[in-house]
Length: 193
Image (cartoon, rainbow, N blue to C red; front, top):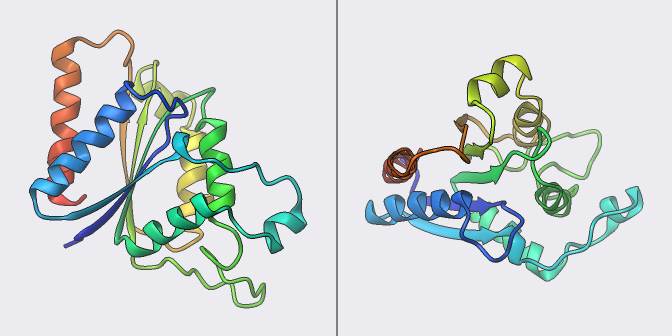
């Protein structure tokens, strides 16, 4: 049973107040009520530059704010990533954060011959909110942005299993529907899943 959870809240608006913030809060509340330890990473509150060159990515050091996020991710047994779907993918700020965090030597060994996944033993849940029906995103559009995160990043660094929660039609949802989503995330937090 996982006891240490890092929640990466990836909505790029630092003002808060969005459904993603509420979902992350609900998950954290459920986990903490079940006596799990939770660390939060609010990507929009971090100050970091974009990685612009291969040399910078391979040999540069992450900023202090990102180094603290790396420590939280390394400490965790379970990762929860919450973000809104923007143009079929995660927001650019979250992608830039992942590029800073998962440099060679953190998620994968820096030895090209070894290709050792350094974050094995962790599980993840990805929570994605969107304006379209979740079924349409998954089946018609192929959930390409989500699959990229699962396969090309998390799976590549050894995170397994990876579970998904897709929440569609958020703009037109009733208050009762929003409360149901929050309760679902609270229950998932309590289970550490």
